[in-house]
Length: 309
Image (cartoon, rainbow, N blue to C red):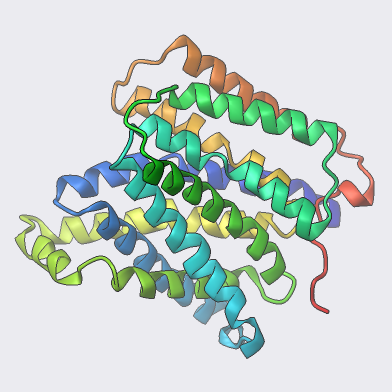
């Protein structure tokens, strides 16, 4: 049973990356209603927080109890990771080409590996380094290479999005040693949602909802956005982190830009290029490389270390 759980971990991480890759569909649709990028973030994380709380309520009400000493950990997950990364990323998109912002976001596996080595003492072997290089090169090719319109502020925001994105794997691994995945995701998004409501200009959002010609359809789409781009992927990713090393999880999740590219081709008729096709192959190669040799030693099994002491 334990072996099955370990085998399912990478699948859950890949599933999360696939759902995150569909985000462009929902963001473009909500933007067409008149919502700003920050307001779309607020809709996404707030509704996801409600969904995670309902899930925790039905599964285990005792999961709402957390130790006061762990509050900084959840503040780091909610504010330092989810809210920080989404605000940085969506703001970076408005300041530079989307391809450049995507490349900077996918520096996250680098941040994760560096933090994993520093805090979790993960082994940085040649296989991981090669997979990391393949994944990052694939992301660059899939996203496209562009150096236009990059300011120092935009560069820092883009790198900040990658850091915040990677921080979820690090802090989430620690939190999972003390709490269930449902508690971790519920409190993470509760805090992120509360923070987003402070910066999204709620009054303007109310006006957009009021002016919508088909309000029920808009509300349903908002719920679907939260479910597909936040609830399902973050729950899958958090469950996967129980048996997959943070560094390995970060590289596996780079299937997201590959999925986003495929959706662009089939949903938005964005013509593929030779470089984007090569990028997809490199990302797939990184994923396959990380999952070779399943009979690894316990130190390579991906189990999260115990930080409960």
